[in-house]
Length: 234
Image (tube, rainbow, N blue to C red; front, side, top):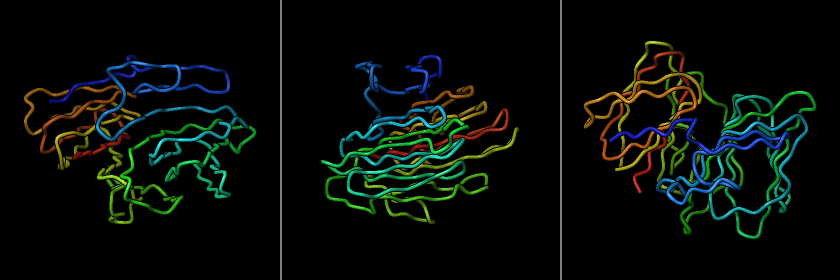
């Protein structure tokens, strides 16, 4: 089963210095039916004005993945760690209890646009406090995984995050390891079909889709496409 979650259905915010779209309940946006999906707690796309920042705040025990789409950011924690990332890079924070984290748009003239995911972390797993990678210029690569396979970022949870970059008319089929996954269009239009589905699910720019009980997913790019497939066996 593939069920869409359109960009128009998502929660939004506009505080002047911050514009945001929330797939799941976050901040002032609350929907008791959308508190996350399996271990995926948060999936936001946010734009921070030049020089804007999130003041220090604490997180639950989650891995915080930031995919920088435009501009540059700096992440700092109260333990003295920091990491910088710019467009074309991803930064992963292994959030710790009793540690606060801040985020800064380091440019005085350019907005910072990024995707942010929170993934529940297994209590018995510990990884490097910060990780960073340059996104590959390829049709498909593994962005994050439990074991850091193929040079991917290492998560504290059994989740595999695939990054897709397809030209118009291109198609790819990916295996789905478990009963649940989530497909997110960063930009571009998609025809998505699972191994058990008979009908195509059409997604527009910014739309997402819940994937349930599919052994594989075929993604066809109607327009130039950039997307994430978040595979969550548990």
